[in-house]
Length: 212
Ligand code: AMP
Image 1: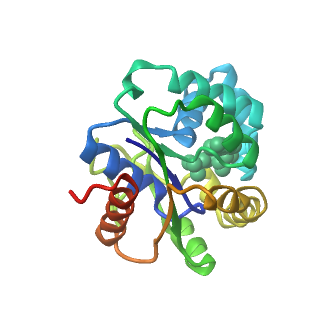
Image 2: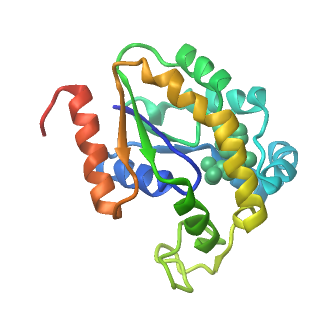
Image 3: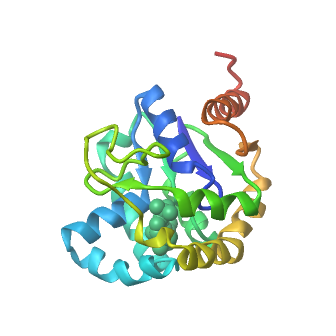
């Protein structure tokens, strides 16, 4: 089981990826989380990525392809994984094609949400300052670890607008790239969390040809 969740910032990719990964017992690989961890740890990767992330632009393809190559070489991905936030460009998608073997299909699900909803969703959301988990609306503490909820630096309205511009320019072409794959599906992301999760599960089942 290899699932790649595509969609604009604010489409709910992280929430859905986490949920799917938990239900199937496979790791969720979020390049955004890997970068945020690196920033917190003050590693060379984090120092290089911080300013780029804070401005809403994309970290360079070479760096990101290095990050994902290393991550997909770890043994915990053998039963499968959910990718969230990678690839973000066609160059990254081409590199990913070279990294995955053909032992299991790569299922690609595009989560579609109208643009006007995205700014609203992103500007209002809060994440945990300790574990990165997305806070429930109106909550002050993280439901997972009790940590303090803060606004992500790149969820400020000006940065959100830049992230959406970057998405349209660099990431939206990915949908055209993947549309020709027989394992590509799109789902309506403008519904409640459980309805989107059910649609993703149905999309995956339709690709894998099983009806569980
Ligand atoms: P995310 O949590 O997926 O929204 O990612 C947060 C930020 O990390 C993005 O706005 C980018 O600056 C950076 N980032 C995450 N994944 C990638 C990627 N695959 N390619 C380039 N930059 C990325």
